[in-house]
Image 1 (cartoon, helix red, strand yellow):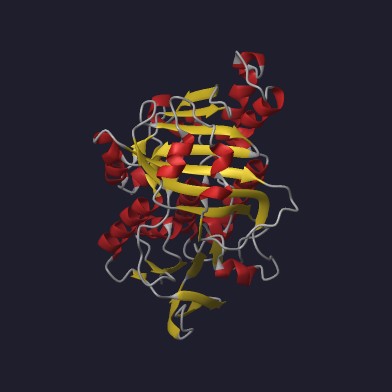
Image 2 (cartoon, one colour):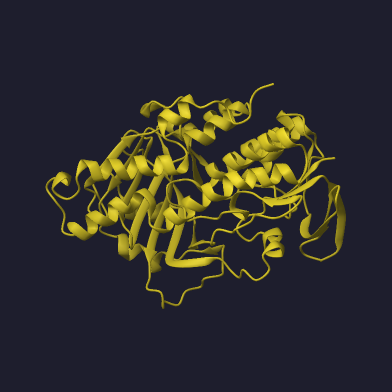
Length: 420
């Protein structure tokens, strides 16, 4: 019997490839009628790139992604707070990649069709309900627009990879309610421009209430002397501020956020120019969900954003989903296609990801930016007069340990899924 996967995003597609690698059948069911390369930029940290490398995808990803060289935190005035090398420049055995989310999804999708066959992904199947027995599960699907029933799926286990608005999670936790908003709004866009700094640097500028993040995402553009820059402008409002909280794909309005960034011209980076140069931008409330005590029971579990949606801090969302995939694959290989494997997977990954969710609520490694704003809002001559080197190093190293990608541990540990 096969693993039934709900959702053909990054987590679901990677899970199908990972299971196939160890000889376990999988079928994916996706709500949309056609998978298209949608979205904006994401980051893949070295621990996730290691897993994708072991799945044989590194070369194709490297053809389109930027191998990030440096992560730099700067103040709202563009003054340096902290910079560190990333990926192989920092001594990891694997790079850190910045890539368009849609490009990565299409790489995974093509690999699934090539390795598992053209019928491995059933589009136009919106998950509606499930039932489980002592020996398997049955999942029901409908057409999302008409509500008409689609073919059901039977398998050994059911894995929900259907994102922060997971239908499967809603059935497992029916009284949970909507995602939790922290008062911040993100406006996201992609702009073609000239490269800044070395063309491979990720910038985080500002503080807790106003932030700008940007990084290039196209290797092809860089090779041609251009930059395709993914950017995120963030403003945080008071808890009683009224906002359009539940519209997840609304086009952003420049007049609502650009004025706050008009003077963020740092010489080496023109923030308002990047914002104006985007073909389109979209607004998203910054949301997550409380960690769950359980991701399911019996033959049903959750993975990725369906299991542990987190604030986009520390570049961890997609990477943690990929780690979920590999641990689940390992446990199915060890325990077989049944409840024991799903229980062992959740026992490891649930507490690990819960710690990251909570750390991100506390601003994760970006807390150093807020400390600078509180201690030196008018700027500074030397960062050492504002933050000690120990504070800076501890913030960076502590988050790497928490998220599972401190260099020494990652480089020395055995594979999660052993070869053979």
